[in-house]
Image (cartoon, rainbow, N blue to C red; front, side, top):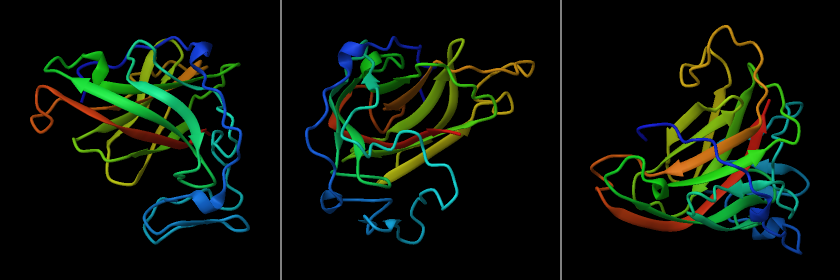
Length: 230
């Protein structure tokens, strides 16, 4: 785990990547929910037993599902410089017809705060929503992860607040956490009752451990899907 939480980064509109000119086609989906999952346009997602579940009928759908080829506002952290080629893709999906993909190039040293050991995505709200007691969540797929990796999500309202994390496992990973003082990761004072969030931050990073070594590099695609705050 990183020795300190990542600092909030400025969202720069110049990094919003232009959209594809074609829409997602269910026939091009390679993986939905897990190995063996399929997408059917008239039925939604059909997942194998034990695979991550999509919203059941009547449950709220995640806000960012990447069903349109237009980037809804996901941008890379320019200070890290570890992400490129952000785009909506039809190659993988947690549920639906698309996801957000970016090419990551990570480098790490024995310094736990070395900035290029992490790939950071941010999403800025036009109007900060009230997220006190709400759950933030997302799905992530790290392609060909040859070294141990972790993933985390945080919110920014006064400064960066950690909400949830997990080691990355093969296939889709679903991460969720509650924005609340009852969640010890957030370190929110119990007296705080209002949490207007200005942005979300998702990090995929190589933790400090002997398996990854003191120095190394990794390059591959990272997919995000079903980002929500309910």
